[in-house]
Length: 179
Ligand SMILES: Cc1cc2nc3c(=O)[nH]c(=O)nc-3n(C[C@H](O)[C@H](O)[C@H](O)COP(=O)(O)O)c2cc1C
Image (cartoon, rainbow, N blue to C red; front, side, top):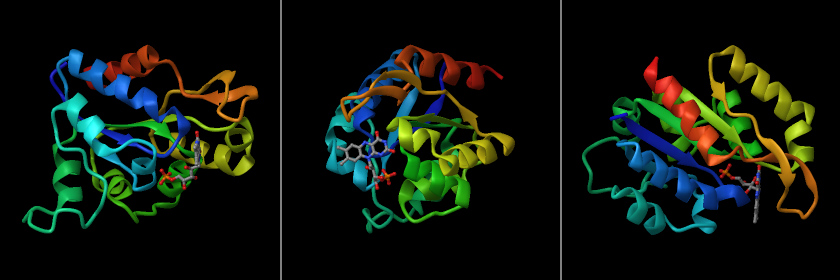
C-alpha cells in the first residue's frame, strides 16, 4: 500500500498507540506524516513521531515561518488518507462544527482525501448525546469511523471508549485505500 497518510494525533491518553500505528503504516509501505494538535504535544513530543515516521511531524499553523508553502493546504493536497487516531471528543466536535483553529483541523477541512476517525475517550464523553450527535453528523457526511471498544479507561474504570486495536485501524485504513 504505497500511500501518503496524514496521521492526525489529538490529546488522548491513547496517544501512545499512535506510535504503533505510525510504525505499522510504515511497515505497509506508506509514507506517514504526523500532524499533532498543540495539546497532543503535551503528551508526546513531535520528535518521537519524527523518529518513527522518518518525516517531519507538524503541530502549529505558524511553526515554520521560513517555508513558502502554506502547510495545511500542501499537506491536505498530498494526502491519500487522513487518519485521526486517537481522536478526542474535542477534535470530533471541532470537525463536526467545521472549526479550523489549528494545523490538524485546517488540514481536515481542506483535504479532499477520505477521513478515518478513531475515537478514544472516557465512556461518559463518548456516550454523551453531543458526542454521539457529532459522530452521527460526520457519518452522514461520509466520514469513516473505527468504533472504540470496551476496556480499561485512563480513569481506572472499565467502559466503552478505548481506542480500537491497532490492527483493526490498519485494516480499516487499507480497505479505504483499496477503494
Ligand atoms: C492525561 C490526559 C488524558 C486525556 N485523555 C483524553 C481522552 O482519551 N479522550 C478525550 O477526548 N480527551 C482526553 N483528554 C482531554 C483532552 O486532552 C482535551 O479535551 C484537549 O483539549 C483536547 O485537545 P485536542 O483535541 O486539540 O487534542 C485528556 C487530558 C489529559 C490531561
